[in-house]
Image 1 (cartoon, one colour):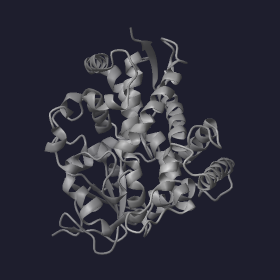
Image 2 (tube, rainbow, N blue to C red):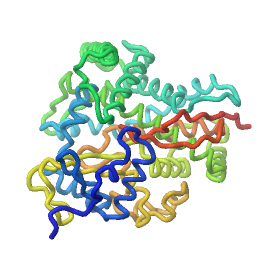
Image 3 (cartoon, rainbow, N blue to C red):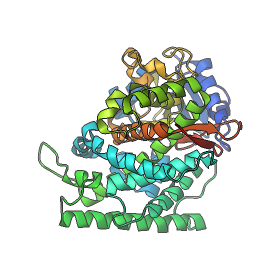
Length: 445
């Protein structure tokens, strides 16, 4: 048995051009798994890296043998220092306890109460559009989703304005994107950008701590996710989260929920603009079910094509396009002994375009989800929210938000590309368009 899986002799053939992450990196990784198989191995700067691309192997790393694989310490430590996301994002002994406490507060039923404020805020946002007005759809949707996140998590503008939320998240995301550079300064170096981030982050955390203290002093006065998280208790012993654990959880939900949904909807509107038949099918469903009225929580199960469009968009352009784990001593994967300290990559982008599980895998075809496809494919042939104990805590919030906003936006508008410039994904922390995606909202009759 070979010591390591096969792989390219040149690590850059596996990683693509790290100086300019783009479609080239995705193509390089896809070519590697097509050439060398389900496990690809390369060595770079004295460290071993593995790229895996099979549902059984992904399940082994995330679920079956998860004790031998931890989140990577380097990048995750940087993210933790920047985001203060605590238990939600990085390895801690009590991670499972915290998830167990908060999960009942994050069910689809609990999330459905947010449909009405989501719809209302989307309506207010759309009222500002002018037919034929060119907008950068990614930036525009990001402004909408940060307002929704602030409203649903913290009851509108309590203690901090939407603009303050947006400013700190933009600074944090800029820093996290720059982490992919080959050379970067640590966050503790007092550069101008780092100092701006420290200041903004201090304002955000101070505001959230004030909100937590106020809610502790007068519980039951709000109907938002912060109230639910504060009230959540362990069923076994009644234990609740500490203030720091609540703070970490809420910041994690704020960042993940806002960015994921904005990115998902950006790609969804782009794909609909490029596929008029799918767009027409979506409009027919919305017209038949809603009949011109506003979407409600009861409507969501009656909109299967809306659901299929979102699933297909997230299949082709998953916002969280790659997951990384670090192998501990004794790890074994697919018959190979994995080096201690090696990094193991899994990519929903690659897995969800695998021709072994999807017909015509690069084509946007929402109808593929309407005949039970999800039950026929392996569990980890589709994992846009990750898996195992670190599966995205806010996945139900993100999904309901995406359904609600897509229904609300497309019931009133259709979206046309403002130009024919190529649209390239830029795979950084999340995968969003590399260049501004300009679109023209056209009001529907």
